[in-house]
Image 1 (cartoon, rainbow, N blue to C red):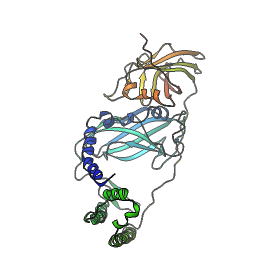
Image 2 (image 1 turned 60 degrees about the vertical axis):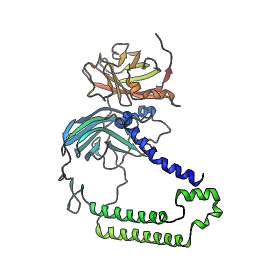
Image 3 (image 1 turned 180 degrees about the vertical axis):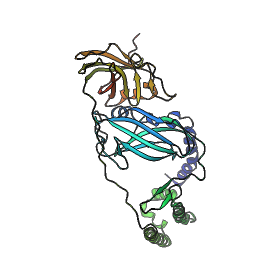
Amino acid sequence: MNIKSIKNKIWQMPFIVISLIMLQFYSDVVLAHGERAQQAGIRMRTMYWWDVDVQPRKAKIGELVTVTGKFMPSSFWPEHLASSEVASFMNIGVPGPAFLRMHSEVNGTPMVRSTRFYRGQEYHFKIVMKARQGGRYHVHPVVSVKDAGPIIASGIWVEVEGKRPADFKNEVTTLMGDTIDLETYGMKEIIWMNTFWFIVGFAWLAYWFVRKDPVILTRYAYLAEHGEENGGKLISMRDMIVSALFFGFTLVAIAGGYFWAQARFPNTTPLQTGKVVTNEIAPQADVLDVSVSNAVYHIPGRAFNFDLTVTNKGNSPLRLGEFGTAGVRFVNAAVLPGVKPTDETDPVSPDGLIVDAPAVQPGETKTFQVSANDALWEKYRLTSLIYDPDSRFGGMLFFYDDQGNRYYHEIGAVMLPDFVDVK
């Protein structure tokens, strides 16, 4: 690589950046629905989300918006992925600083710190936010897992009316009794500090650019062409002196900034890194034994078929009303009539679950076939599971008795693809 080729690549960079920016305008999947970006196997076998709701769906700036729902870490958690039982944090995913999080809790435990979410246990969450900026936002509950990243639920659109007024305040009272506005607190110091280091960095770069000798990438090309043994003349004694002066000045500035901050803000509280223990909730009644077999995804028909063996240990007949996986819901219209998507992005199929058997009677064990059939498999990129090296699925079944009581049960197995178009 010579100096000429380096210069050509530098001239090409603006065109590459412009192309990437233009690509964003034609990438609707990435822009709005981040839950589709994760691998199907991760979404299906990490967190099960249900009863997720946001109220109100329309709000004004300064009003409170509450996000509620339930989730359960999967018992079939992928072995290659860090577990939620190590360290997890309940959060909310919104594009930009559109809301202020006022309160969050899981099973009644405040979620100011991290915690552990154990596999197979049910958790109820509540997050209260204040609308801060006008716009239309896709709001996602998120569980951030250490070393694994965010595990997100399907989003719900929230519309915030108006524009943020200039006098919008986010006031809190400190432990010292002072009332401060977090929207503007410390802004003067932030501006001055960033300006100072920008000037220092610009001066450092400017020194090397005003030289007549080749700089930065062209220096690298020179060394690659002539060898390191002939590159010593690129660094003069003046360069070494200037570098030492910059280095010493930087150390003095850092030390001075530290002592100034200690004097300016004498009372501080360190960031808290401990974990809290989340309250446990009473488990549901043990009325079901469920096992799954012969799980096949029929590719031409976009249908997921599997056999269920269900034992009813309760006192009422049970019917399968819903199958949920990766935030997508397939509903049995015969059990749950009238279910409709809340908007055009709600991942629910109102009649996508077909069950070839009636209710399972008390004390009865019955085997029947279930089919989850809808284009949502393709739309939410769940069919990519068949190309994974570990094509296992996970999901939640929801059964209902005659009184409308709901009972869930987790299932998981290997999913086999079927490429044959049966007519």
